[in-house]
View 1 (cartoon, rainbow, N blue to C red):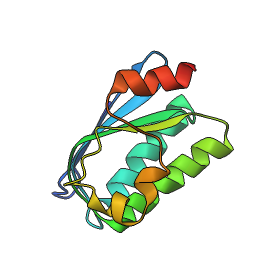
View 2: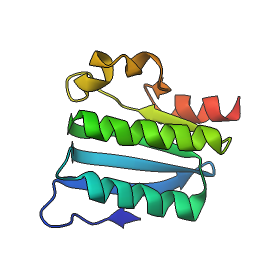
View 3: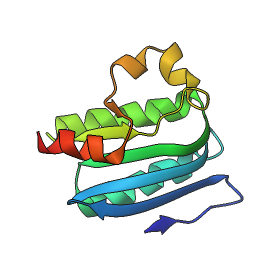
View 4: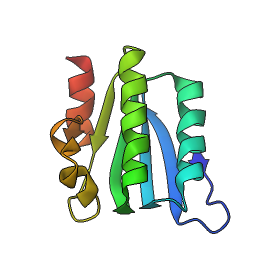
Length: 122
């Protein structure tokens, strides 16, 4: 499933299911201009597939603190539902706010999808 770009927003969400886990590849800008699209896309995906979620952020060109807040919210929702959550492909240069806030040390970050899926099976 691809969530289309709305109102000229510079964000694309593409989802697929790998090993029974929804994987969402996020490309573009995660900020106030794409907030609604991001929220709606993730809600649609989790409504359809359940709480487990891998967010592939390798295509993110910029992330602000509001977007990070949304990611933390989904992480907390997933944990409350006893699901699994992972972030892959996070790049410091595009997601600096994750390190500035200290959340890079708390969120489940993996270099590759394979590593994230292996953690889900452990």
